[in-house]
Amino acid sequence: MTQPQSFKTYITSEFDLHIKETFQYRDLIFLFVKRDFTALYKQTILGPAWAIIQPLLTTVVFTIVFGNLAHLSTADAAGSYELPSFLFYMAGNICWAYMSSTLSATSNTFLANRGTMGKVYYPRLVSPISTAFSRLISFGIQLAMFLAFWLFYVIRGGTSIHVSPALLLVPLTVVQMIVLSTGCGIIISSVTTKYRDLAMLVGFGLQLWQYASPIAYGLQLVPERMFALYMLNPVTPIVTTFRYAMFGFGYFDLGYYLISWAVSLALFLIGLILFSRIERTFMDTI
Image 1 (cartoon, one colour):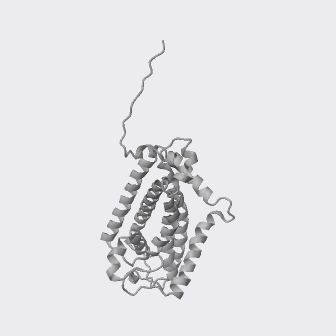
Image 2: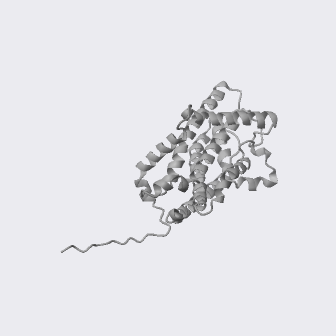
């Protein structure tokens, strides 16, 4: 006689985020990171050197257009400070380059991985996480380039740049960039599985967000009556805190920085919840 089959029933929450299971697939995350980074520079002559060339050229353009021609202020706080505008623009550009590239790539998670997701099971959260980490490699290269210029100006002297304990804030700003950009990207990727129009607005929205953030100018240009509202933009405290940490002077407000962290975490949590709900049915709508 054949033995009767036994079945087990597992009851899970509707908002099961599979955090533990995702951690168990960390080897797959590493493979996806390697795949994404390789694909990013595949069939290019200069390869990963583009991670340096792009922000370097952008910084040169910003220095010429916004610094030398438009004469926009690069001061984040009132006072007399000597800061090379080239270094100011590079600090903002490498931060924004990481956040915008991660958000843009993560917002395309379901569409870019639908072939793999439709054939093989793995925690779907692996895809956006690997995307964020693969872009982190490029950011690391750009940060090394920035540190080389930073060290050059520190050794040469003639500037107000100095090493301070605020340097400890740099890792926090990097983690926050990961949280914010991944959270926003996941939200967009979850919504665009059904409403593709939003995907068309990502590039335009990122441009507006960049100009609404202190990338090409300092905080001193923001009118006082709009300052509080301007600081609610979560990118603003990230960029100003990064510059404050690297230069040893500038603007840092713990209250606004904590609000920025709260907004970043809220967006990330909302993204995870949406992702958890959409991943069950996305193959039917994608």
